[in-house]
Image (tube, rainbow, N blue to C red; front, side, top):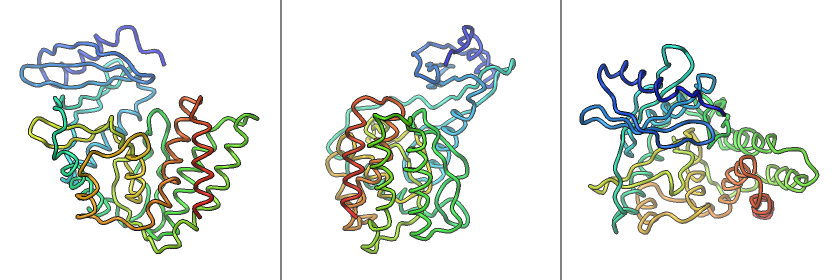
Length: 306
């Protein structure tokens, strides 16, 4: 995606318009889909993202997710402003509270576990309670579909996860000979999903962050855990926990604190590969490479687990 050459001037103008004063702006770089900036206006500081107006849903979805998490009053997230459209209609700008993070202390994992458990135990923000979300959003650069289910039964969740998580991600995989084993393995994993819930696990459609790997959490100087860059939905909380274990492990003390407040079903380990498969497939979609073998192995583990 090519950003407008005059984007710095346009971003600065948008911020001056919204904050009615001078703004100092410094470019921080660009990802594959947006540019980032540090902005200062007096004592106020923001982490700013900008994207072409044609990709407006990307920033709007991020703002929506952060606002939804903040509304639960369970876990700290950065405050947001925008997104705002530039006067010439070419650019959208999102201002996120600039937060300075400290090195995690010995109690960070416990506090993160307690805050995340409180989030997962909070009432479903959709009425009536159900799975999905009020809009599609992004998991990385990939569109995450969130069409709400009709109800909140276990069968609704299995169908949602089969169609709008594993099935939707499988549909994005290229139909090449090299990926045919992966297509077949994912199809078998989808067929196996109902058997993973034969142990009585009845998920609650709670709000989850949705993309909670270690790069998307941090700690403030006063010890408060913060999460950011969400891909929210009302989902089984186990899907969140599985993502936290995919590319690392939660910090020490997390599990005891989480279990104390929210509990954890004994069958979680059987379902964990299914929830991790969604993210591995997304990495195949985004990056290909070595994730193909990992995704096949994970899909096969799902089929065996049923």
